[in-house]
Length: 352
Image (cartoon, rainbow, N blue to C red; front, side, top):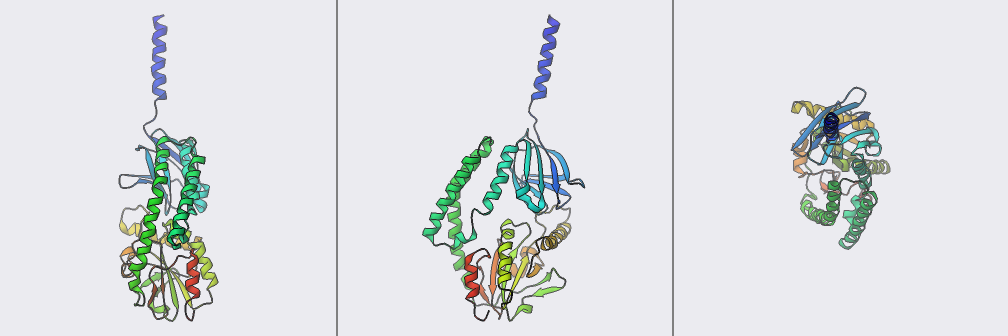
């Protein structure tokens, strides 16, 4: 009898050991049309993990983490993921439709599929034209957006991790004061950049995607609408379809559309700065081809530190600039392609 009791006790101990939660995350999956040979999981400056991709796009690795949100990078594409030790996550995605194709299965899938769905919802939640509204209209629209966010969370909160759910509720509470503060900053920007109007624009002479260089002086005699962007910048990429429409509608007018990339290696992991800059340059050309970008495509010769970027006090992108045929600034912070105001501005130009 004692032997039976002892055997049962041993089995109970073994079972407990087998059922103990893992103190790490297992992350595996497959990437179609991979952008690089490695994936990166990052949380600010406190956590960074490189995961090697196999030739067929499959991967598998373990991560020991603190519960919370992380950024998952594949080359210049990224998304938010929620990690917690004990999770066993498998993801699949096609980089040609990054957010739309991202799917998770396994332990922890509910919270991460929620974040994937939320990313798609947020793409068109805040239109750039929101910041063109007068203050009363702006405030009314923000109330609508706040309700839309609350409704989305309520509808999709089932089975969310409690830590993530609490964070999402805080984000909604902080939305109105945050976006209102940004709106006031935008109003202040207009006054700040007013001093540029009518003055000669800081010049550039940058490498273009077709070979050779393009300078601002080469474009004298025409209006120049400049888009300052980068391949890793989500808001920049969301402006591309609208920019293409503007280019198409004004193709026979006296205006050139110039896209200046400030890609400098950000979003790429490499052993040296030179290697990351090379990867950024290759990624720039690849995106131009994949997205069939038009206009004049050039890349800043020194990233954010070029005289052109610094001269226009550019510290955030996308940024849009309008220059007249004489090379003088019309607007140092012009409306975005997606803003109805841009067409009003362009149609109102003399001799366009």
